[in-house]
Length: 410
Image (cartoon, rainbow, N blue to C red; front, side):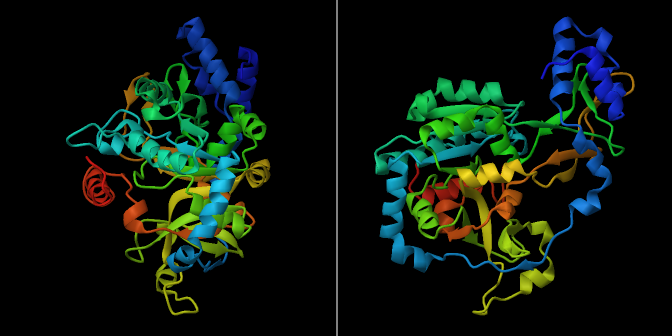
């Protein structure tokens, strides 16, 4: 949003951020315009929240939420799949790929999705995901709209890569890119860091910001125009996941839920995945770092672990419900991070330890604001191969092994 220098000064003064214009006179005309646009478009109301973190962290009463488990799914697979295929053929289901991240932890400066996990051939993360979605396209005999969320950090590289690779055989007219909104990054006193003389430090606003970002990009108009009623949002890093899975879609529709969450049985009670649950009687997710010993030891009515099912960041949302959710405000998470910044003399510093806060909305809070959610169990070895690290648990190595087990040539 373009504003004048006088308006920028007024806005910055209101939030105690006047230092942002320190180098304004040194910038080119284009640099000045870009900084004014960033100031105009930035939400500065959130900056004060780092002083009220305790209030933001309060959780409600956690109780179990029963999942639809594999035996029930198998018994109803034919019916669920028929319902899902019908919705997909009617154009009511679309996919949203959350691909705003970089491959930093994999030792790459590129978008995470362009990472090559092949050994004897090129096999990119994006390629795996497109191949998985193509299975459903062939099964339903219709193209499915695919929305790809990028970020300020990786947009151009992502679009260029997928375009050059001709979307790995996907129909280009069904692929739509949009950029994730950015949130400012601050020091411990709530002062905005500068990452360049003409640019405030910022980072993507968390995986819960995807639908708001779609609205900002004007894509919700397209969703209405196309008659899309369900959006399957999924993470970029799980190369085995089924996307717009007809059985999952059909089960969610038949159970009259407004959301669905794919879940897997946890390997250990303290595995680093969020557990599906109820919080104050509403669907929710308790993150692994919030799992108390009491929750890990809790049993359900059948004597089984009460919080055994972990989410894999593959969710189905009803569009009307999403619009209702984002018309309210999502909870804000204040996260301590290492933030590169310009020091007093204008030199870029890359800190070795956390030095401030980033602000994020999380998709788990979207689940908590829905009226109903179906936890839908999937076979871990067939649908959960996340790539978070280069080696070890949830790594390139472990994902390759799982891909091999599922008949994928590497």
